[in-house]
Image (cartoon, rainbow, N blue to C red; front, top):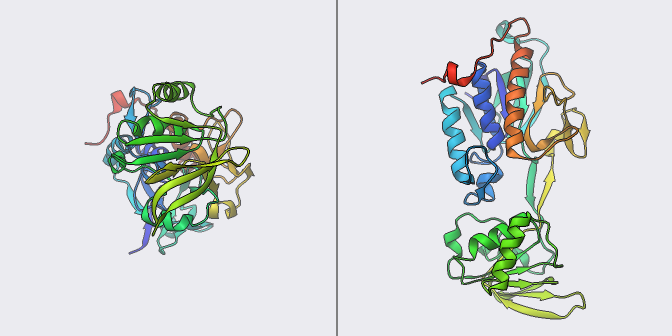
Length: 343
């Protein structure tokens, strides 16, 4: 029951992996998709489902969860098979294929699923990821109750609460702006008055601070947590001279970025550069013929880590994989407007 055969195995069910299903389908390649998470969407679903994304072509703004729903609907006509909640633990090259089907790879997952395929696309985003946690005493007890969290699932869960957000990047400022109308009070803690976020987000945040709608706490850093039985009542912050003060808070959201690791991918024998998979930008092929890397996990000169660029890479990789699988067949390219998609 756990053995399958297909044209392409896509590793990663984030937005780029989901769009790769569509692009493979358009060149008549069937796909199985594997993801370590129990759901599709990758970081869009796990970290910011209600966060608006502004740089998806054709959508002035779209929430991450809606983008994923649309991509699933777009892929559905091509009947992808999903293997969720399991990690790829082995990628083996095949010298001899059963039934003369020319399967090139054998993929094994942590749940014992085995898939023989003719090409592999790695769309694993940043690989295995987890939040960078602040070094605060007793942190685990507050994490267990949700008083300290590293993602925002539903904004409504923060209604009428005192929320402290720590960080100076896009995620921190985006959630300051998004939660301000919902929370009782939002405080932004950062170690300096300069921010590493989009200029428009910085301007909106500074306007809220100037109007007294949020509290801008700079230059301060997280120093400690106050509360009882894992229920937060205050966040202690310290300035550069180690002077401390306490901010009333029921919730702390530290946005210090993600700790990214390739995990088992690093052991699959492909060339790496700065913990990313090196690819040929013309085909997105890695150093192993038949294995492609698309989205944030790859590297080449001029690489931009944008979902939009990942979508383009998915299309290019699908065409390259088609030629790899069927080298003697000429592909007559047709636009989707004339070709259509399966009903």
